[in-house]
Length: 60
Image 1 (cartoon, rainbow, N blue to C red):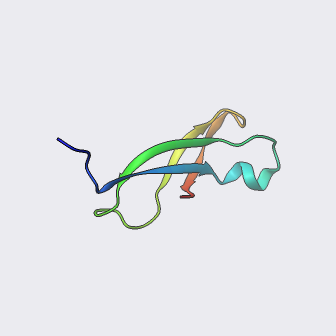
Image 2 (cartoon, rainbow, N blue to C red):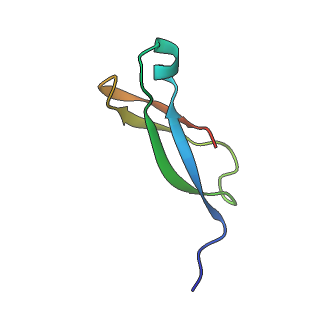
């Protein structure tokens, strides 16, 4: 059995940390089904630099 060709790996990056000017970057890697969800992902994830949950958007 091969891999599912509809699932792609995407990178989620914190939007709040970019605007605040705090050094470092919070990024997560996840997968999504590009056939079912064509728009970019937006998930709330924990940012260890800011020590709170922030909005992370897909960059790739």
